[in-house]
Structures are given as C-alpha cells and as structure tokens.
Image (cartoon, rainbow, N blue to C red; front, side, top):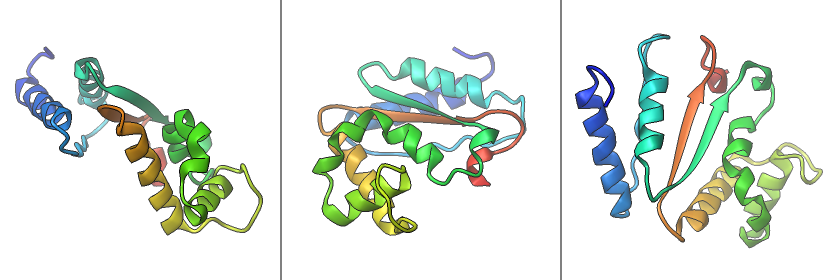
Length: 141
C-alpha cells in the first residue's frame, strides 16, 4: 500500500474489481509533477492480476507524430488488423504508416481502435496504463 494513498488505492481496487466483472471504466489521474501519479499508476498495474495490461508512455520526441500513443496501445494487436472492417482498417493502417494514402479519417481510426481493443479484450480482462514522462503532457500537444 502506498503511504497516505489509502483512498486512491481503494478507488483503483474498485475500478479493477468492476472491470473484472465486465464493466468498463476510466480513471484519470491529474496533478502537478511529483505528487505520485506514476506511483499510483504502478500500483494499478501491480494490482491488475488476471488482466492483460498494455503500458504506454508519452514522450516528448513523439509529440509531432500523430497517433503515436494509439500506435503504442495497439501494437500488440496489429497482427489482427485484417479482422477490422474495411474503412476502419484503412484508416488505422494509414495512421500507422502501414499503407499509403491521405490523412486518415479520425472517426474511422477511433472506431478501429475501439474494435481492436474490444476484440483483444474478448478473450479476457484487459487494462491499459498510460503515463507521460517529464513535466509536459506530451499526448495533449
């Protein structure tokens, strides 16, 4: 247990218990640098026994790369790209530079991402843990 983080750890435990019962949730941790967000994220990952966990990290060098965080999240599932419906598949493949074409349709890329994550989690519980490094929130830029 993290020192003085009983309430936050209990909230993470409740979220994971709900997810194990098939209820999806999102937990956003916000705060100034150094307040313990990464430690709480580590607690969540360590507590996610029985889950397939995808851990992502936003880094400054990828700020100009569109879809960089999404690529990190879906990289383990790209072998199943052909299972995604046509327009969604094209948008995601274009976003990740796997196929040529104009700018990817953001709505189709979003739908494809949702499809890929849902398909992957159909085999069991899944969780993703995302954090940014440094003092900036690199995915928001």
